[in-house]
Length: 264
Image (cartoon, rainbow, N blue to C red; front, side, top):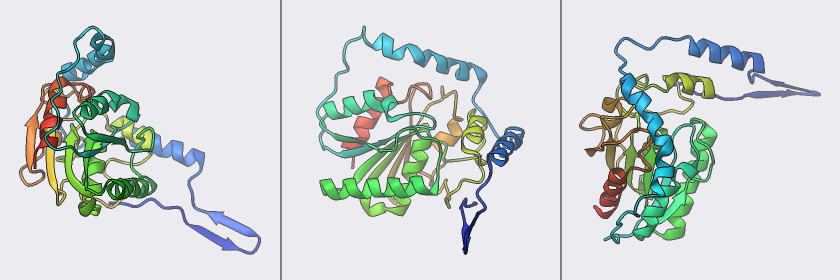
């Protein structure tokens, strides 16, 4: 794992920085885009990737459907939702509403769009989790979609006393970091390789809290083997029939999350 840092050296009347120039950042992204995935990488089939487009009409269709029957929670939790790569917490608003209808206290992660990991992001997210845990007097449940679920696992490793449970939804925590159809976009946006995140992390290692992986055989973005994980990398894996983009809106996924929140 590699670290990204900006080092500054000061001298009388002069400041020098090794921060990359705009030209260097552009060149780096082009170099990353030109890379080829390793031979053992597996990506979802094209038909599933194209099927992701169907999720664009879900919010419109929902207006003509009856509201979900949401039972009252047996145990009311404090939940923080972590959005997927390139998405805003707004994309998880429907899920937040349903969890709140059940009686849970739902909080956003507080950082807007998820544009990839950084040391600063993890420091801010750690403070957010610790603050919410202190405010409500109990460990929080982290529910992370896609890359947000990877963040949730890493935060739980760093602050296990502040996290009661981790629920991931289509999160690529197992196998090759190229087991998805989004790694080129990730390289373009972040400027670093999926193999070299700017934080120290052993991603497949299970957090020391209860960890449940929701995965879908219809996922068009992340390979099922990457989001399901191997025994020992999570406590349980639950199959959901939905697209990758559809995790936060899928009734089946919502019911699975509600069941997990009611669990130990």
